[in-house]
Each structure stands twice: as structure tokens, then as C-alpha cells.
Length: 317
Length: 317
Image 1 (cartoon, rainbow over the protein chains, first blue to last red):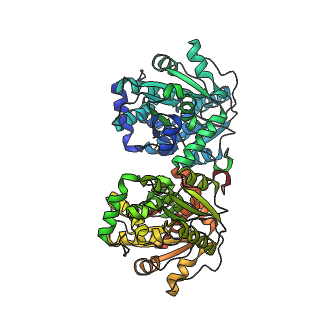
Image 2 (spheres, rainbow over the protein chains, first blue to last red; image 1 turned 30 degrees about the horizontal axis):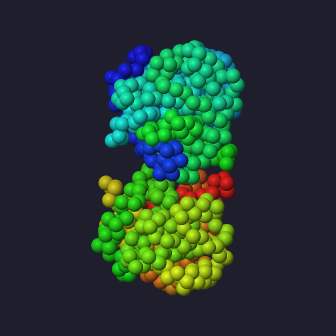
Image 3 (cartoon, rainbow over the protein chains, first blue to last red; image 1 turned 180 degrees about the vertical axis):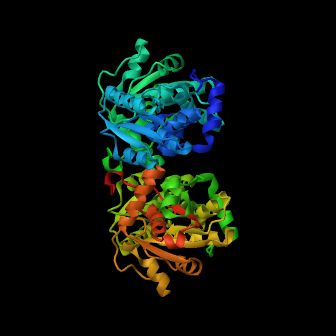
């Protein structure tokens, strides 16, 4: 582990490290959504990534960066879903034991996927305090290494590789890249990749109105909690960390909030027009671009579709 | 129009003709579905094609093959959905007038799409006789050229380009390719592309139990109607034509039927695991491979995912 803010060199090293295990996901375009937004949109389809989300990148980079001694005691994390799958998947790749602490209201499809990677699941209440307490107890008992879902520089460095690929795959220079923001792992990684690999590209974020902590923190210049938490975008419920926030504050141009109705409409466009399965959190960036025509009109915009893990039995359509 | 059975040369010419207007669709793989089937599966994602289905290929080839005199009077077809969109889309590309006869129970999303391409829609009862009668009336009045959904050599030649791309994109040689069968346009085109471009590849078809005309015709050696028609796979309700049947009889190895339950299960796997939106008809090939493990186990199998146009308000999950 470097334990330092990602640099151009550490992002490049992370990309080389995770490449053999991940999909180089495609970049899709849609004439319909170009016309609707008035912009030229490039969708980086991380819903088509291993485990169905970009989190495979950060999880792999964190696990592959551990020493043999650390791996011998296993790895542990808490997560409402995609990060759990990412760590379970990554641990399986290196043959390490894996403990996952999950809220007891996690989507069935995500629980099943974690079990499929051979991890040991411990359920907890869906509060940050109860999650961390359960993790601490297991760490004390097993000596497993805790891998935080976002407030971890190796995780951030891994997430940065998605935007790096997007930038490198395009022949055009993007005016903007937009990513969803929850704890800020993807957003801070995206911002650093733009800074290093496409310095003229501005970075934006989309955030649910019902978990609007990042936009508050961004404006007040200190980490804030959301005024209330109630959104369909269940991957974005958490607040920023002391490692993600300074990067976001320094490198991100603006954060836009979107309502659940706008998220579901964007999700529907992505399903109906692009024929891809996108989870609500994964549609937040698209919703933000469609809502802020004045900002994005006429521009070349990279949109990170973060994940596609939905429970088909509980769709909002 | 050549009006002759597709040859290697006419398929190559068709591919060059339609290429500027279509997507070169990606080939996806899934570790999960490989393990489930015991085979090595290559999914040709024609759900990601323009208009959301392979039918863009045949429609374009047929329309682009017409003379200026023919185009001046417009084009016409009847279709329960995807072929309608294909012809409307193709006519719009060449600036020709387009008449579409649709059954009055067609999915809303398909009606909206046809309207979006600027076609004039006339609704009819959902019987082959009423469809054809309505078409004949409009042809008599306008002089429009009728483009049959499948029993047309230019359409078949266009559909053949999907399997041609799949074969050319792979570095492995496929043991088998499987396509769904309704009227047989895609299946006969697929069979001819395999014959010309990958002669060691055997061609199979999947067909809904509730529209099992092709398997009957294949066994009895004459065109038969289905004993009953009742399936969720609404793109495959029709029976073979005198142009598609002889090609299928000569070139296809076998046809497998699948139940609606098996179709929905396969569809669910494609949505959940591959994160792509596939319509019931588009999941029939996958269902047939999963059902016939003895036939496909250990083999390299190309699976044509034919389309992704579903009404999200009426999902079977």
C-alpha cells in the first residue's frame, strides 16, 4: 500500500495491476440521448464491469496491494452491496478469506452475489455505527485487513482507472466528465484521472436530492451529512471521507442534485434506448446532464454509468 | 434487387451497403453462463443494434436495393414491431415515404418508435389475412413497394450480415451458431453466412413451444402452421415462407423448442448477469442452449441475441 494521494504514476501502476482481472468496458453512444441533451455523450459502461460495477477496480487494487502476511488473515469490509461484491470477488482471485458486513436490508441479488464469491457474510443494522462496530469485532477476532468502501487511497486509485480508460479510448477530447457521488471514491478517482490524463476536461458530479451531503460539503468546505436520506439510489447513501473530500474540493467543478423521479426517468432512457441494465445510482450522472442543459449543451461529455446491479423483482417502472 | 438466394458475394455486398448505417454490435461473454451451460458462449448483441434489433440490417438492405423510381412511391410493410421500425428507419435514411401496417395490440414502445421515424401507421387486426389485406389496399392506392418481413431475399441477405460479423470478429472457430426462428429471415441468413464464412460451424435454432411451426415444418418437410400460438416471444409468432424454408431445411442441423418459463429464465440471466436488456424473442436462443446441454456442452457456441425492444411497463419478472 502506498497510502498516499493517487498520482499519475500510481494510477498507471494500478491500471496495470488490475487489468488482467477486469473488463475493459465499452463506451456507448446514443443518438436519442444526444438529441435530448443537446450534447455529445460518451457513456463509460461500468455496469458491464466484473461484478456489475466499477467497484471491482478499487477492490482489486486494494486487495492486490496487500502483503502476503496481511492476506493470510483475510480481508473485511462493510457495504450495502457493490463494494461487498468487489472485495469478495477480489479476495477469491487471490485465494484470501473474506468477511463481509452487510445491512440486513441489502438487495437479495447483491447478497446472493457475495455468497457466490465464497465470502462469509455478517448482517448488521443499516447505520454507519452498527456497520463499523460489527467490522471492529471481526477484525479483533481474525486480524483481517479492513478495506473501506471509499476512504482508502488504493480504492480511489483503482476507481480512477475507469476515467483513464474512457479518456484513452476516445479520439475526441472531452469538455466534461460526470460521475455519481456517494462516499466519493469514484468521483475523486475520476477527478484525478482527468487532471493527469486530460487536463482540459472539467469534472462534475451528480448526487441524489435524498442524500445531498456532497453538494453541501462542497459549498460549506467541510464534510457534512445529508439533511435527510431517502432515495432510490441505494449506492449513494453515505457521506464523504477525509481522503475523498479534499480531492473533490480541489478538482471538481460542480455537483448537481437530481430527484428520484429524474433518476428513474434517466434509468428508463438508458434501459429503453441503450438496452443496458443500469441501477438507480448508475443513472444519476445521466439525470444530472439532462437536467442541466445550460451547462452541458454543445459539449463533449463523458458519463460514467457506475453499475447495473438491480433487483429485477423490485423495479421502479 | 437481385431476387435470388443469397450467395457469398451478395452477402458481402449487402454488408458493405448497410455498414455505414448500422452498429457493428459487440460480442459479449459471461463466465456465469459458460459455467451454467458447460459451453463457451459468444453472444452477438443485436439488441444493441440500431432500432434495437437485427432487423435494421435486412430492412436497410431491402430499401437500399430499390431503384429511385420505386423509392419515389415509398415503401410499405406489416409487422408486429421490429421489422416495422427497421423499414421506417431505413426509409427515413433515404428520404422515402413509409407506410406501416401494425396489429392494433402492438407494444406501445414499438408504435412510438415507428412514429419517431416519421412513418404513417395504419392499424389492423392481428391476423395474417387482415395484415395483408390492409397492405394490398395501400399498395393499390400509392404504388408503394411492399417489403416482406422475412420472405424476401434482400431481407434475408441483410440479416445474414449479423452472423458474418460474429464469425469475423472471433479468433476461435465456432462449433455452432444458434438463432431464434419466427418467419426464418434471421435463421436462413445465419445459416448461409455459416455455410460461406465458417463451413465447419453447425447452425441451430430456438423456437417457442407456443409458436412451434418451424420445428414441425423441419420434420415434415413442408411449411406447417403452429398447432397453437401462445407465447411471450411476440417477435416469433409467424410461420416460415417459401424463400426461408428451403434454406433452413438444407442448412440447419436442428431446431429446439423452449417454454415461456425457460425463455423468461434465460431473459432474466441475460439482464441480471450480462446487464443487457433483451426481449423475450431475443432470449430464445440462450434458453435453447441451456436446455440442451448434451448438444452444446464443451462446444464454442455463437448465440444471436436478436433484439431488446421490451415494454418496461409489462415485464414478466
